[in-house]
Image 1: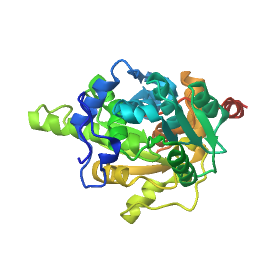
Image 2: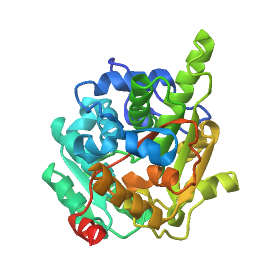
Image 3: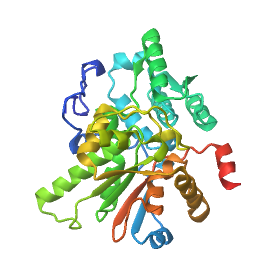
Length: 351
């Protein structure tokens, strides 16, 4: 790929990096990100729930990123990205735009690195996410309801205050960091043959695809055989915010007129150019799920399995439970991408 391979040696300034070429992130870059994250990010559990596997007719294990630092997988990409910034950029501070989880991740990573941070969040962001970012030391700015509105405000503040923009998903360093989640799952469960990942802007999905296709190729080259099947990799979006699915159908990234979903972390109006290329090249399918299926799965996880996840975090499992993905006879790894559930929404869910 065209941006520098993550390495302990000094990197070029972010402005010298280009990620608009045809190249994709590599497995080596994901492995390098894993070394950076070792001791910083949690190695989250891959949870076996026999009752859930019996219910679904396949072996299921849940990768609980809801237990990650800052409450979601986003910490992986944010910390990895910021660890690569040169000293002169770190000194000026960072800014980002986010529906909530990336904002908290950047705020925490900045705090750990001794950097100041500003986060631009939607006016509709759940209080738990706004308060979380502020608790980690970020200045929180509220702007609009769409990702494009947040991005424009963040860019204006960055220019006015000399802050460096930490992209939420469409960046090689972010993608490499997010890919460490699937890498961990494949290492912990070599027999896994299917991966379901929630899909918003596409950074988490892209990193997953890089890691798993890279492992698949390495096994094939070594004639290791593995479990005898290639990985089946499937992204999951809300029906009311299916920017990637629409983009794949069109053959290029498209911008939605609007979004309508309770899964606030999966609601960008447009996927990234780089993440689109990754998903198009590496995924078997992208499916959509209803808000009702997401809500039901969130409630099911809490009441039956004692796992608290936010609505966005339950989307991948909702695809399996609602029949949008057939897991029969498969060994299915499923992401629980985040656990930052707003207390008011939780009360409504349990009412």
